Image (cartoon, rainbow, N blue to C red; front, side, top):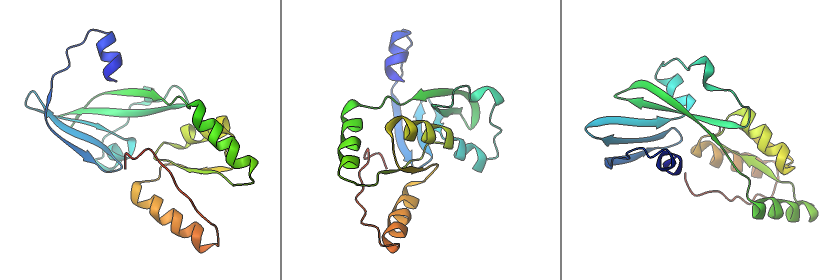
Length: 153
């Protein structure tokens, strides 16, 4: 987002405070205004209507920008799968390891990434605490589970 803003030569003011809204987005004070960049789930929980034109591409994650708790816009983000990630998944699959993904992304994005990477399955719209529950559930079924992530949550 920052890179694109700089390309557009937009002024990027500094945040006066910042906090993560676990599994839902981020919040900061910028130029005295409350700014949030949040997930669709946050909007649903806050009873804020999601614009119909927010979803144009199945492989994009959409985040919403709120200024002082009012919807100001949205940003569509597309993940680029790193070659080393694809290589690691191929290596695990060659060893007979079942590879699943648990992501906070929506169903369409999760399916697109899963299909692109050749995963054995995926879980979409999973919050951080639900990922722990998912690991426990799989272990309870006798699965040997190893997990890695981006470290964001």
